[in-house]
Structures are given as C-alpha cells and as structure tokens.
Image (cartoon, rainbow, N blue to C red):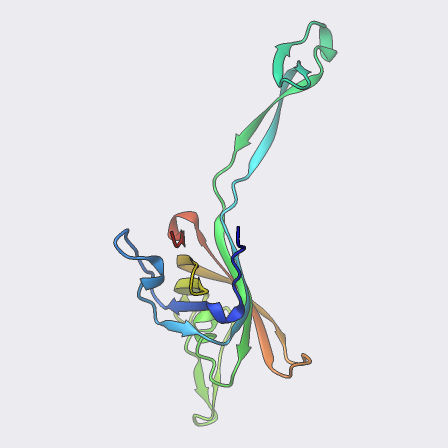
Length: 202
C-alpha cells in the first residue's frame, strides 16, 4: 500500500476574523474564509486528546495471565489477590490546537489577527505600533481569531482541519537572527473540541 506524502507546497492555512460554521453539504476545504496565508511554515495540528485518570479502590483481584480472566482472590486481609482494584475515570475531551511559525514579510497580513489587533499609526503614518494584552483596546478580542483552516492536498489525497472560536494562546519567541535572515514568530492557537472538525477525502 502506498504511503501518502504531503510537502509544504501541498498545505495552506486560511483564517477570518469571525467564527465560521459548516454543514454536511459542503466539504471543509470549501468553507468560506478570508484567504490563504503564505508566510507560514512548520504547522503542527493537535487533535483533541482523550485522557483518563486511574482511581485506586479497596481490595485486590487475582489476574490469570494469558486468558485475561479476572477472578476473586482466595486470600484474606490486605494482600487478598494479586492486583489492587482499580478503575479508569474518563475525563472530558481535550482541545484542538495548531502551532507553527510565521515568517514576517514586511506586510504582516496575518499577524494582525494573531493577537495584535489593528494597531495604532505612529510617526505620521510611517509605522504601526501594536500593544500586547491591552484590555482597553477592543477588550479581549486581541487574543481571538474567528476561524482557522489547515488544508493539505497533494492531488490525490486531501486532509482538512477547521477550528472556529479560536483563541491565540501564544504569540512569542521572535527570532530575528536565524541563519536564513528572515524574522520569524512562533504562534499557538486552540479551540474547543465542539468547535473543530477533521475531514479526509474518501
């Protein structure tokens, strides 16, 4: 069986400033967003994780190795049986995450939505200044980008992840002195499991 190979040229990331919705009548890659963002690399998508918690219970149980048959221990007291009685408590589902690196081009179209807002013109219009974490400016919206879509298409296979009501949880680690010479900024975004979806081409 052939292994599916995706390369950087096969991937796109799109966004818009408001939340999005989708239905079964439309593929996720056709959900209307603002447009593709080219100045990104090293994208990693995290699928919601199901975690469990071990809970220790009173008593012990004998375990017969090989046939997975659980039978009550015959001994008495605190060492009755071979294994302490336990259960797995299923926690609520985790979240969708996406992380990557933005390569700033001098016309930072995407960084505006990635937690910095529209900024303030300075120097008589020669520059734009961005606060970080300012509550007074547009409340908490500076940490919100409405929707993100990561789409891979190599011509035969497709993979799509859409995240809505997305929070930008990290916009940091600016690296201006890399060997490539361009300015890079790492970012991470997150949304609830109910606000994301995964789609594969049949």
